Amino acid sequence: MTVEEYLNKSISKVDGKTIIITGANSGIGFHTAEIIAKKGGHVVLACRSKEKAIEAIDRIKAVVKDANLEYVIFDQASFNSIDSFVDNITTNYANFYALMLNAGILRPEKETFTKEGFPLTVGTNFYGLHHLMERLYPLIQNTMDEKRIIIEGSLVTRAAKYHGKKYDLIKTHSSTFHAYNISKIGVENLFAKYAQINKNPNLKFMLAEPGVCKTNIIHSFPSWIIKPANGFLKSFMHSPEKGSLPSVHLITEPHSNGDILLPRGMFSIGGFPKKRRRMSKRTTRFASIINDAELIIKTNLDKKSA
Image 1 (cartoon, helix red, strand yellow):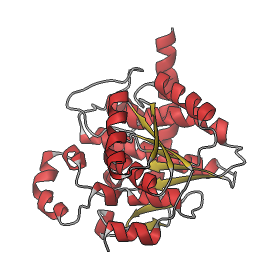
Image 2: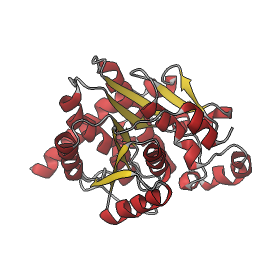
Image 3: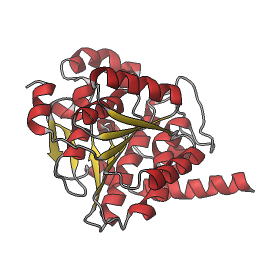
């Protein structure tokens, strides 16, 4: 089955519904935005810069002539930008139907820090998302309208090792694969936290895993993994468009709070979406990462304000 056939057979229209997608100018976020636009959705692309957002909008409109698109500025590496984003969407897009939290970085070339002083990879992917959810959840937890929060996970969590807050959440260098790995463990635990505490049947937290796509994600792995595995992985990797299908399905089709979709192929590297029964034991084993992060955030911000 081709992606186009799958979209025609398994993906419903979302005419007029507002879907906000962070990190929508490239990769999984971009292809999700394009597909949702094809299905009639009002797509709000949340990007770090106006230039990247407009470029993405132009690319989508070249394919979907009548696409209903807007953009907002969003930088998950900045708590101030996150605060502005939450204020913006709860004021101007309060009736949004779905929010896809896809923004993040893979592996910066050199050690860099967020505006709050956290290592860039963990600071953006995990601390930034943690702050966003802390701000957003109280504003939507009692919603009377259906809202879906789709969080983008990763299969790299299966290789994760969490040694404790001092080693992983403060000292980790952003240029290492381990930092990305830990950040995604944190992301999946954030999903688990909010799916568990949410008691509102109108609000749904869901997780999408894209598998391994033919994008620059493969370059986030250490060279000792890439070289022997490259030929093997190429046989199973799929396109970013196909990798976006778990997210698309969670946006458009009937789902329950806590649902997880991932590719159905070998090791979940590629294939069309299927449902995972539960969070992996490896992810839930590291649930303390949330408490560790909250302590570190408080300590770090207290130091900056002193």
